[in-house]
Length: 181
Image 1 (cartoon, rainbow, N blue to C red):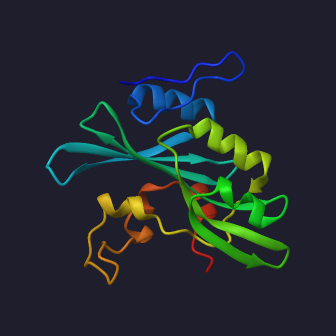
Image 2 (spheres, rainbow, N blue to C red; image 1 turned 30 degrees about the horizontal axis):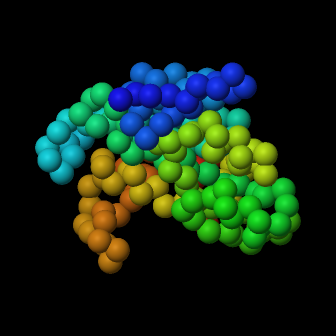
């Protein structure tokens, strides 16, 4: 448990089962700052934490949850990203989301599973484009479902309402991720 990639050329990277202390070190080295943590119970009534982290320069929101307090369970990057080349070629570097047509090309509005290889994923995204901040459009912040209250919607999950946690986010984070639909 808690294994990390070690390479003479690159610093260690996260693996699928990563200890919290290792993941926090890696994301701090990548420029993320922990903004807040929320306690919640998972479906088996285990005590868990949801971390909200932010990369101010790139406008990336990172949400991750713990598994019984010792390792990472879920981790997702949320962002707006503009490819430097042909959008069709760069799709292989992307995960959830879709392209949004903008006046100067296409912008990816989405998220990326980052439990494994967070450094490598950030490197590839930066190599093939750049992050957009403030966001043009907010992706669905699905991981906030752990701390949201509300009725199930037609998709079968709880409505994700940023307003319910806005009071716990600094103004510089809200400025980047505010809804601009």
